[in-house]
Length: 321
Image (tube, rainbow, N blue to C red; front, side, top):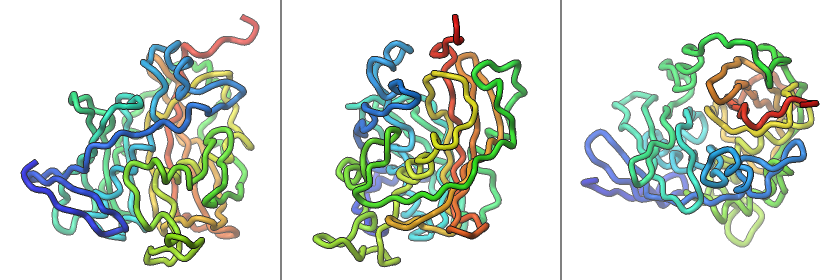
């Protein structure tokens, strides 16, 4: 890259490399925090032994971990608006393993444009993900808008045979406090995550030595984009959809969209989940779930997440077989 600038907005101190129409963040080494994750009483794809049985080199780094490397790029393009109404939409293409370095890239958006393309690479050029950054209100389709419109009809499904598009969960109350353990799916707290996050912002934490306020413009700490994924999956097992199992799954596509944000640490929200599509590949059956976020008692959506949870066919054993 031919030129380097220091981003100091948004509470970040991040070096951005600029070369023509591309902007890149620094090389980062994401850390594994889900080795102890469990669901349905079994280990997950982030456990080395489980992942290796399924043909992976080891436990994979969870996809939304990579979103933190794109947030400074969004802030460099659109300022704090990206933290209030930004969207990261991505198709995960290759797994990352602990110890590997990855770098986030963004095509420089045209003046006045609220939409651009993004991608992430390993040092050997392997593409980790590809997608879009955008602002709420931009009319261009996001990466997952495009993915949804291209889905082919499925054949008979086995793992998802009881799933129907339009199924909805009940509303659940959720919150994320700084030192709250986020449960079996995410056995760590926000405070612990902030010691390992790839790109940290002072806007994610209270002022040093105090519980509040934050240095953020909103006077309180905001939830990092990758931790919004944790918050919105927090109650998934309280009101589960009828996926047959046990089965090992992974994230194949994910979009986190802020509409009237940011989301704040220590604030109550309500979430509701809906199945919006099903799909399959040679190796997976996929359930696309959109989670909507509300202020308690309101019907106005303030944020959302679209997640393609792909179940690995080879990990499923028919009951009784």
